[in-house]
Length: 315
Image 1 (cartoon, rainbow, N blue to C red):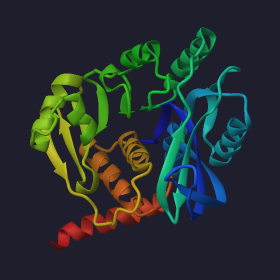
Image 2 (image 1 turned 135 degrees about the vertical axis):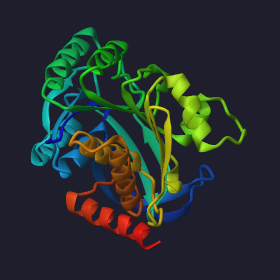
Image 3 (image 1 turned 180 degrees about the vertical axis):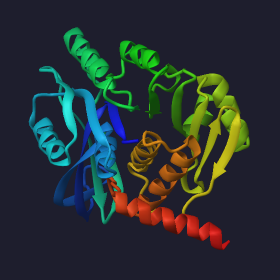
C-alpha cells in the first residue's frame, strides 16, 4: 500500500539565531549574543510534512498562513519537496506563525514564539472544505496541534466523522482533552499525560498511566513517548514497552515530529500499529543526536532499523 498522508495543523517556521557569547548585559543579568548566522526551518505540521516527503509518502498539507515572506519561503521549499499545498489557506490579517530560537555553541538559551491569532469565518470555511476534499485522497491523516487556534471545534468534528474510515494520528502539544475518540491514534508525551491525569508527584507505572489515559481520552490506540526510555503502546487494552535506541541525546527539538511522520508513513503503508510505533521509535532515537529541527531519510531510517533489530538479536 502506498503512503498517502494529509497533515492538518499549525504551520510554523522556526528561525534559528546561532551565535557566540559576548559576556553579560549591563542592563540585566542576561547573556549578550553576537549573532553569526540565522537559519529558517519548517516546524510543527510543516516539519511532519517534510519528513513524510523524505520518507516517500505522498503528502498534502493544510493549515493557515499569512500573505508574507515566511509563507513565500515555505511555499518554495514545499514545492521543491513535492508537498502539495493546495489545502493551505492564506488570511490577510494573519501572520505566518514562527518560533525563534537563540543558540550559543549549539546550546539553547532563549526561545520566543508567535501568539495565537483569530481565524475569520471565511478562512475557516475554506479550510474545512479543502480538508474534506483532500481527506478523500489520503489513507492517513495526521493532526498537529500546538494550540495556535487552527484546530477549531468544527475541524475536530470533521475529523471525528472521518475516523470511521480513515487512520487518524493525533499529536497535540496543547488542547489534549479536545481529542477524545476511540478511533484516533493518540501520541502524547509522558509528562503531558501525568498533567492530564493530575498525578503530581505520585509514582505510577507506565502501564497504569496508559490505562488511566485510555479512560480519559477514550482512544483505543495510544503511543506514550518516554524520552530517552523509548515509548509505550496501549492498543485495545494491550500494553507494550518498546525499548529505546542507544543514540546519545543531544537535542530533543522536533523529535516528536520525526516520530509521528515515521509512524504515519509506516502505518499508512500497511504496517501494524506496533510495527509502525517501533519504526517511529527508531526514527526518533536516530535523530536525537542532531541539533535543531530534524529530518530523516528513507535510507537513514532503513539502516537504523537494521542496527536496532540486530542489537537485540545479539543480546
